[in-house]
Image (cartoon, rainbow over all chains, first blue to last red; front, side):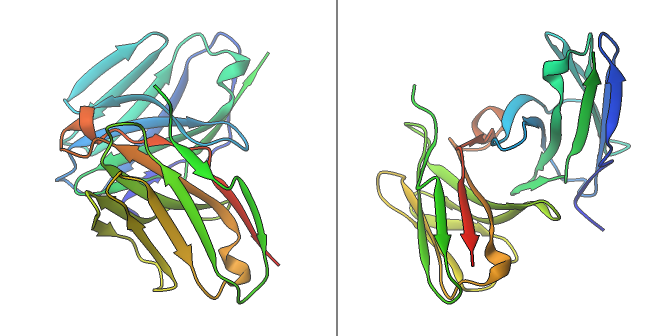
Length: 108
Length: 116
């Protein structure tokens, strides 16, 4: 079993819609949870992190954490074509574990 | 504030050779982690250095090694290169002192290694 699981997609949404990206993790001792965005040919860039159960909002992005279900999600509101990228979920306990990423395409 | 820098950006080597990659972290960051990224495997953790000591190690063969200097700059070495070592090698830095604010990793642009 992988430490972090993501649906590889691809996920396609129309411009202006809400994109929902999901991630599950196996280590109950994990403390911090991160979402990164990676454009093709580029390195990952941090979108946001969350460490408490519930929702955390940053602009058009909302991260949701449910430690009981070992589940993290990222919602992107009003999706734009520039949001088309691969989204990586990362979990930190005593080291970082990354999922393989979900490819998102926003259709104009 | 300058970001994480990696040199060189591109490398072409042949099987059996060795290679050294360099990473300079964000000023003040003491933790440097190395990852290998391939299309099929995603981001695979190689190792993490904190204050010149290896703190964590991934599941890679001993051909992969690293070190960190007193100024927190880090190098990664791969000996006896194999075709399967062709990948994007990413370095990430963080404060490394515990807690999400200080554990957040910031990535460099990566080194694209091609082994022929």
